Length: 432
Length: 138
Image 1 (spheres, each protein chain N blue to C red):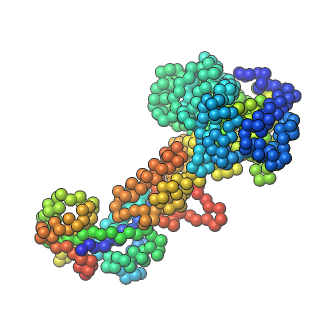
Image 2 (cartoon, rainbow over the protein chains, first blue to last red):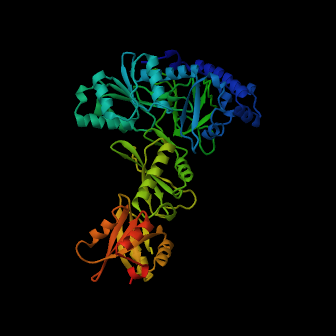
């Protein structure tokens, strides 16, 4: 089903007119309300009047996560703080979080975008949907929740953590749809198999996102649970889940380009690349009031296909993500930068800052082990001291990353050293 | 009259203890006693050696994490009930760990005790002999 046919199936001319009008207004707003954008535009000799439409977008400078950090927490907001009705936060590249803010209208648009995605997956107001993303500062839980509620479905705000309880409710309530990470759904599928309760379930559709997954994983989920599974994409800086979502034809994720204008650039030369060429996804928010972002570099690598989809939508389709142009990892749906581990260890000051992160996937669940070198200044002659140290590191990392971590203490100088660019991550997850 | 114990952090990998004994051998250091405490990922090797300072420097030079700490070595007679007698005298103390140092003609215990000085005087007044570094490693 198509939720908003006017917007999702707009003709190319109409869309260009709408996008251009929205961009002109947005640029004018950020120029006058956000010091950062005003300075950036002035530095390249631009005034709002120079941006007359989408064709002028390429004149504008890029925005990055570092800019959000430099203006932490509210420096890039384009409205007075009183008009912000909600904030969310995600991992920054160092200690400071990346903070995003929404006006009431932003929340409404977000809810509509999520509703479009749910509708594309076949969810209707008659469904009962379990939202099994984390609720809180992470955009996943509340984002999916508001969208499902906006659509009129019955929402079960399950959040994450207790699979047995989730399955009991899924059975007892007759849950028909679920929103969660694909790896968590695979884990759920495994428990369903163990318990032999597949026949008791009414589940028919899953909307999965917050981490990259493959066609293979989608097929596995569909076969194991006898459901249809759909991919949803988003990032908190732009909005949260619901920036783009695939339809029943699975030809890529339709991006809601009446709100989010996509470009693909070469991450080395920063030059836009053509249709179908892989590069870094860059998004400009066309309607966002709280935190408008102009040409935001997502660091996600993908390509875009244009042209009408068999489903009738005319929105461009983002293809499967092939990786990142930075070193960010997504572990159990949580964004993790190696630099966060280093910062946490340095701040704690009880181990050397040498570390190695081992990421793996065990029983469809991501695991993170952090190996830390111990030198004699940090331990005494008893095991308790080392256990305490290990627990302390574990606590500090959990605090910093928002993720449970296994800590392994290793001998000094046993972690590999590399000439030049150091390698701090071994990712053993196989995506195929 | 403390005895210096050498404690080495050992990663849970093959050949790590052998590495320690090799370094000590190359430096002509004699081991009088040792104990190994282990957890899943690592262990602590505690050693009583002829030249603790030299041992520490030699092990550190090879990149190992090494600590020196004070322990008490107490001589007990090599017959039934003597360890029990010693522990009865120390019943009010928190013994963190202990291990044995024994030869044909004598026996002694190496102990790490929390309230070290008070323990030492209780041991002496209870009639036990506390050994010095040179006595331990004779």
